[in-house]
Length: 304
Length: 276
Ligand SMILES: Nc1ncnc2c1ncn2[C@@H]1O[C@H](COP(=O)(O)OP(=O)(O)OP(=O)(O)O)[C@@H](O)[C@H]1O
Ligand SMILES: [Mg+2]
Image (cartoon, rainbow over all chains, first blue to last red; front, side, top):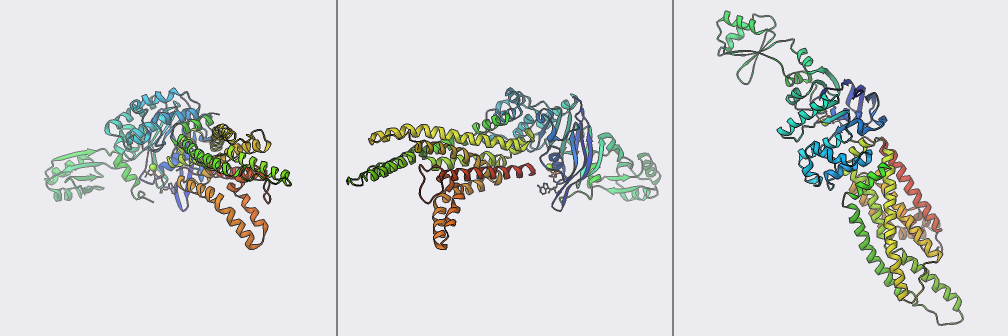
């Protein structure tokens, strides 16, 4: 299971006047789940498609285990990809769809039944694709990706259309694959889900890399300024008491609490005591992935 | 070889192939009945009485018989070829229509190999259509001709040539269909183009070019029509050479050129194209 490293280097894709992907470089390590995050139109899908030789880069390279996808001796046995939910012939059964892929990849036909079992789709194996629900289509896509028992997996928004049970199943499934030493690259919008799932993250916006690294490190890199949630009936008095502290910022939140930044909780408590302000809550906040993501991509987000 | 197998599995796991085969069979029955009726009323109807011109007239009758026999042995061609070209088109355009092209090219990043496999399978499917139609035509025609008290002509070189060239036409139209499909990815656009070019091409273009040539008084204009696939195809399978027409092999060459050119250009475009 070695050699499953994904290396993207200076990858660029230009559509007419739009730089969908702009000099993007990052690496993805085997044995870990890597979340590939970015706002709508950031270039995630385009990047994955360039990695898979479906879209030709304008510049730069993307390799898997040191080789371009087109140069892989046996792509199905090396890389499994789940791109969009709806890619099978409507009139073909799920099982026959997989058998076509087996034939093309030179895999034994029984692999089709193996992977259907793996994703829990055996009962629907002989039904036509047009009768599949969104979640079933997504599972069929995962089944197709697993046909060749690949050491690298790439999934574009795999949680789309899955119910909570399905999402939990997917999380366990991807994590077990990573534990087996495989490389797992997952793009997603669901940040809370990513926080549970991913070991590493690659965050992009407007086609450019914003940050990459282990989830913990990326979060920690944002905790340079303290965030403290404060609840008080005397908002104005507290604001006045805190104005004496250098670097302190106070923001009112819609839920009635205050977000205090730039000072630690003990300093706030001390200032409140000195100012005779009554406090109902004083909680240091660890920024979550969603907060970090929004902060990092602020101003760069938006449909281009 | 894997890819050829995969294309065969693709064909056999959807309804297209047997729907088209059924269509070809029904239209074969209709055209055979029509051809037989025409043959019944024309063959032997002009049996000459005069002894003086006996030899010449005999020759004409035999010639006409061979022409009719060749026509009967190749019955169903007009619509059979249409179904074969549509099958070739659908083999390509359905991949884009159903977005299976993504998984196809993921499995096989070498796109030229994928298209080549499609060309082979489409040509082979055309061959199969021909084998079945010919398997129906030979006994049916023999029974009909014997019922008319006429020789079967099956051993005649001209008739054999017509039957074999008919087979070549089926193969080439299958390949040509794949070529059209890769050039025009949209299922609807490709199908409509092919049907119009084929049916109208056969019926109208000939008249149009003849009129144009007469009007401009330029013979060569009339010759251009043989460059069109449908006209070339009917030229190729005619049972005999007609006056004022190029030889049958010109039709074969023209059709091969069409199949090769569309297939090559389509493949080159597909190799570069972004799949998104
Ligand atoms: N074939 C194409 N032609 C022109 N522009 C394109 C094409 N494909 C993508 N784009 C543009 O490139 C940009 C990046 O698109 P991409 O699909 O990679 O984003 P994404 O990060 O996957 O977004 P989402 O989260 O919405 O799926 C978008 O602005 C999009 O409009
Ligand atoms: Mg996307």
